[in-house]
Image 1: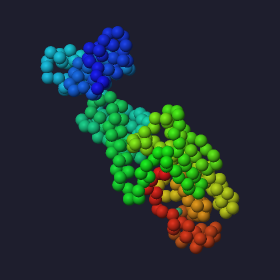
Image 2 (image 1 turned 45 degrees about the horizontal axis):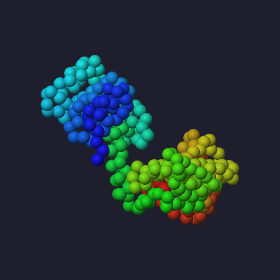
Image 3 (image 1 turned 90 degrees about the horizontal axis):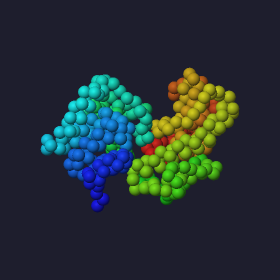
Image 4 (image 1 turned 30 degrees about the vertical axis):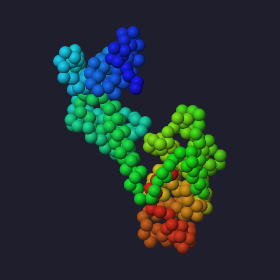
Length: 333
Ligand SMILES: [Zn+2]
């Protein structure tokens, strides 16, 4: 097994190789039981800004962690001293203050210093994490990633229709207006190429499809491509039907909605389609488009609406198409 001693790590620091020293201290802190001196020195590196950005709150966190692990006074005396001085110089973040930042996995995160416990919740467009005072705000991301993994795990295993159980190079989709292929590339990023309505997603060379986080990244990128395809096909189709029926709208767009295929804000004459509509046949797509166009004149679903709709499409044909569309889509691809 790969091992680094405290002396080796400290030698890097003495030689001015700060980043190497921090990496070694951190490795020992995470993988070696009771690496008290390493944890203490990791705090010191954060306090002084050696090999890492200067951040007294992170330093406080590591010092406290070292002291929790330590039973011998002789080992901990210097850590305790530094901790006390740092606490005096850096008052705790104010009760009720909050920090907002962007995270690659969870989107916008708001860290709130509220209660002496870690609690997190996912709201519609951001996630909130309550942190005890003194904890660096970006620790919220670590808690939320754990929570996120749990949620994804449940989502994958509890849905009634089976989601794609394997998403890798063998995965493909053939919808009427959106086709998806997956290929492994040689780069480090996700990318794609497009030929007509066929999108080929190119995976990073090192993508490990056994990991849920990779499968999630593939789903996310695939949905992005589906949105592109939906924009290219549905919006011109909407313009065509607006022309044909004489029903005007002001603006249009594509959403990720799973519980409806189209929505019209009658007042603003704004029409949005779910990207999932792209998976269906022309007849179904046109039925949804005409339904939403009619909402630019009549809101709600009473008889007046269906009478109005009847002027633009035959009721029997419309019913047949609309009724065979499911009410919601459980999975993205
Ligand atoms: Zn409607």
